[in-house]
Length: 271
Ligand SMILES: C[S@@+](CC[C@H](N)C(=O)[O-])C[C@H]1O[C@@H](n2cnc3c(N)ncnc32)[C@H](O)[C@@H]1O
Image (cartoon, rainbow, N blue to C red; front, side):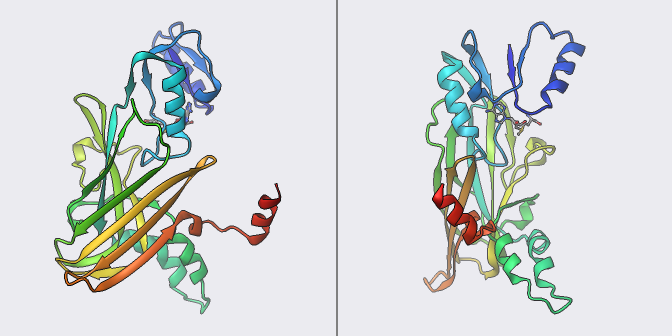
């Protein structure tokens, strides 16, 4: 058995293995899997290297590489697959946590430039079922035995089921670790399948809250593009009344949520 981990936490894993009598059965590699070669191919690849969503750092390219180089052709990958769910949410508290500090303006200072950044970054936080303004929609699937593309584009539309204030979209996954073993951080995940210690739903905020009525239609185009070691997330939202009248059009991206100076662009362009 091979255990591969670039973080120094691998020493704790070594100690735990030793304390349980497995020291001579596990070969530890203090490295990224992409930098490791093994003397044989494994029968099972266990990769819990994603984030709150599967598109995180270089998780997908690493799994693709390990599947090709380190796993036997008929080997098994755990987790098996993820289904991604998204929902329009009334998340006043989470939204206020993100934006309040830049809006309060207690000292008469305009700090809206920082507010523009935070509404272009995703956040994480618990969502309860009573915050959903429409039932979550399935918008993508990841089958780890077959995935090759590190990027994803999801398109989804909701008909609002009850009136409320929409603050953005929550996203999460139902994960089949192996047949019969499920975990979930989907917006409507029941408590008994929530991995409370690690994964929470992701919240993509809107630039401003939107008052929504039952029957309004909200559509979303959500894209993740891997650039070097990080994903750029882009989310385009349109909200309209049942009669087609536009209520809001938002075009957001984590690219707009990262302070990048013109000087840095110029420097990088020269490299
Ligand atoms: C989500 S955390 C693991 C969570 C842990 N399994 C748990 O349940 O608490 C992801 C870990 O994967 C490691 N990791 C990421 N990419 C890796 C790779 N290509 N090879 C080995 N480890 C990797 C990171 O260093 C990090 O420690």
